[in-house]
Structure formats: structure tokens, C-alpha cells
Length: 361
Image (cartoon, rainbow, N blue to C red; front, side, top):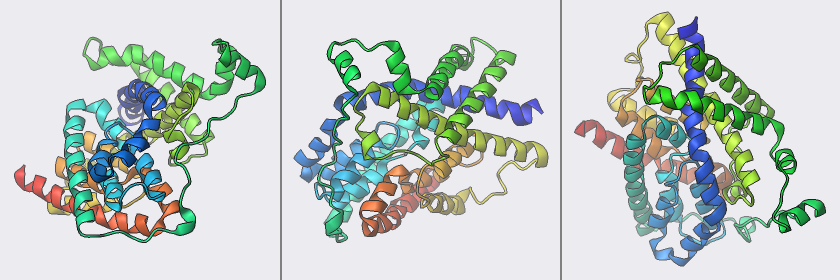
């Protein structure tokens, strides 16, 4: 019972959720401080568009790719730059992989940026450029700052924001989630570095953390993600923490689903994954096809299966190249022709790179 049900739920929070939190905060702060310069860099270096667009997806999550989609929709970059970003992004699955294996994630990022840039330049060289909808051009990719309430505006101007005001803006549930994450980190980090053994406290904190994440996920409407152009350009640290909490809950829930499902399958049936078409050429094809599904939920589950030992690296790479993360969703709303064609185009390098890796390994 413990190993089959409770341990996977605890591991999802303690091995993934906690480390995602340690990454979300600094990356969110950096996006808050310098995010407005990203789209400016794309416009200034238009001839280097595919390379710059691919490089903007290096930070975990979907923010960089969403910025590129917004700039593309208003005509600021070429279609090749949009394809480069979609190929290079790992979406929210990058949080899962980065928390579990930072070295592998860095290697994958280098590979994805290279493949993304080359794919983007190839698309531009071939002259592939779907016609944009005239009435869908976005006038600006940068959201206007939200004017706070008069009392809060005075407090901000005076450089003093009481903790009660900050807590009210953040919300009780996100604050509870961040508190749980901080508590879990005090146990998870020593366990990760083998300074402590995962005992009952680890199990209790992990299950409790996953429970809080599930509540936050449900209260958020069970949305696949809330990534959009607004959250790609946060206007305050409170917004960074609120969105970061949602992102952590989202990742934790789907990792828990993957871990729990894999644990039940392996323990109850003895099924070890070798029977699935996730190995060899069939695995590369399956990984690329799964990447066609928009959003990050299925991709997070896929990454979780890889970390559980259920698929080889070639299958994972095919999936990471093919998937577009949440960036495809705003593109579907703005330029559906471009989005639908992009899902096909990103599958081509996914099959090629996955097959090449299969042969080399």
C-alpha cells in the first residue's frame, strides 16, 4: 500500500515539486526584471530571428516561446523564428527533467536550441510563410501595468507594502502552497544529497504537499495551464508567485499521475514498459506523435515515464522536439493556419533527430 500508492505521491512533491519551486522563483524574478527586453531583442535582430527565438526558450517553462508567438502574430519576426521557438521549447516538462537530472536537461537544451535554429532557418529558406489573418494582428505584446488601488498605490510609492497586503494579493492557497514547499525542502534536499533516508516524515510531508497541490490545481479550474502573453510579462513579484504556484501545482499533479499510474502498473501486473511501443523506431514515432498534442499535461506525464525508466532517451528526445508546450495555444487563437502547419513541421525534425539518436546509441 505504502510503496504502491503513497510513495509515488510523496516522490512527486518531494523529488519534483520542491525543486521546481526552487527554480520557478528565480526564473520568475528574472522574467519580471528583464522580460520586457525579450521581444525588443527579437525585433532588433530580425535577421538572427530563428537563433534568438530558439535561445529565448532556454529558461524552463513556456514564457519565452509565448513571447515569440506574440511577436510573430504582429509581424515582428518570420515564421521560421516561430518554428524555431516551438521546436526548441520543452514547455513545463523541462521543470520535471531539470529537477531530476540537471545535466541531461542542459544537454537537451543545447540540442533543442541547435535543432530549433536550424529548423527555423530551413523554413525561411524554403519560403514557408502562411498568410496571417489581418484582423488578428496584436497591436502590442506588452501588457499595460495594472494600476493598484489608491491605498496600495500610496504604499508602493512610499516603498512600504505591509505583509497583510502582500498576503491578500497573493491569496491564502498560493501562500499555503509556498509554505508547504519551503517545509518540504528542509527534508527533500538532505534526502536528495543522501544525508538523510526517506522516512515517515518525508512520506507525510510529500503526501500532504501533493494534496495541497491538487487542491490548488482544482481551485484553479483544472486548467492545463494559465500561460499567456500576460503571464509571460509579469508586472509584480506577487504575480510571479501566484503564477509560479499554479505552475508548480500543475506540474506536481501531472507528475503524481504519471508516477502513480506507473507504480500501479508495475506492482500489480509486473509490466515493466518493454511491452509498450516506446522502444526502437516505433518509440521515436510514438514520441513525435504524442508531441502533436497541444499543452504540457501529456508531455509532463511522458517525461515522468522516462524518469521512471519506461522509455529510452531517443523516444524522449523525439517528444521534446515535437511538442510545442503551451505556446501553441495562443498561436491557435491568433493564427490558426500557422499553428496547424507548425504542428506538422515540428514533427519532421523530431523524427529525424530521434532516429539519429537511436542509431548513435
